[in-house]
Image (cartoon, rainbow, N blue to C red; front, side, top):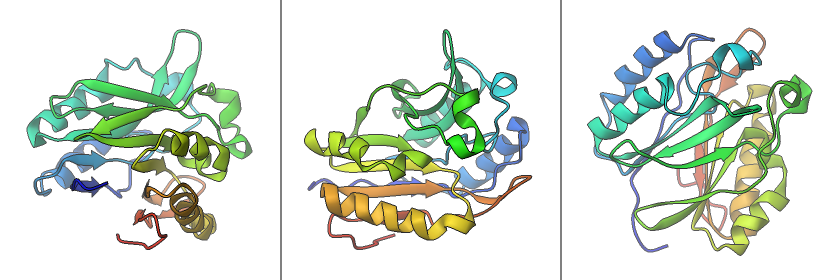
Length: 222
């Protein structure tokens, strides 16, 4: 990968199950950003990792999309965010990629719901990998618990992606797993690995971030 990509990792504390207040926080944070090619937000960006899937689900052209589409157009850069997507038959934990005009380019549905929190009961499972591009750079998408399943990333490696991105709500009690797994995915697939995690608290867990970028040699560069 020879081209340079300026990426902003938004490591913030969403207001639990409150989209409006979370949007206020994000607007304040994004206002301070410099010129970027891509801004990446954590999993379930506006709600936190809630299992109230029916209460907070929405179609991909509704509130959350309109908010991040406005950011993409205002900052003139691509955006990736997490949303609780209302599908035709099921609800999904989804990563959305918008271009710098606020249009949806790709959507990835989490393939491995976190069964220990019963996510697999309240959310459907995605069925396929998704490769997207920013400035011609090939990117494989994933969400949180997916990181523990190396076979998913081998599929990306076979497609010769330049980087993989994982957005997450990964708690501090297992943060060394997060860092180790990100590094391993970079080394074993010989690509950059970017992890964007949240900070703060929800009713059950504490999050301490450690959003990171690892190069193909396993060196942490951010």
